[in-house]
Length: 172
Image 1: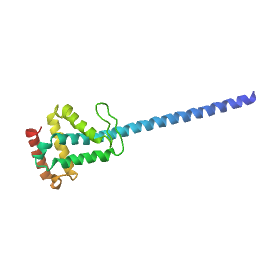
Image 2: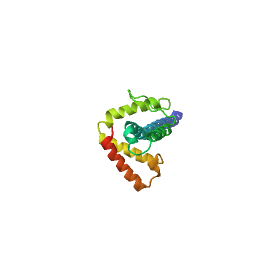
Image 3: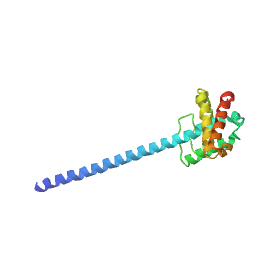
């Protein structure tokens, strides 16, 4: 009995240590899962900014061409390149009818996104959409894309004001 009295606390201590390890492992797995979810959301959010710009420029391609910013395809290519760069080898699942966003499905996703943005966002808030498009053009120019990249900030501001007015009057 004496041996049993000594072994019982040791067994409980060993069992507690196992429970602590299991709890620690479960907590670590939960933290890792939460971190992975947060990283996936951050990637998705960053991608959607560029997808919105890509869709907006595609939507306003003809008015932009007449707005004095150069060939709008430069900006389309810029935002597509940004999407490809940020996406890398990741795959972002999507709820139907949207296709998954991955390297393999990028064209299908962007085709769907342009139509979706036009149908659900841009036509519902035309002024906001025009502001988005002009902000996207300005951002691309500030990062070195298109003829406005060569302008000083004051000239770029004037050009952007002209572009905003042009899009509000003649945009799609």
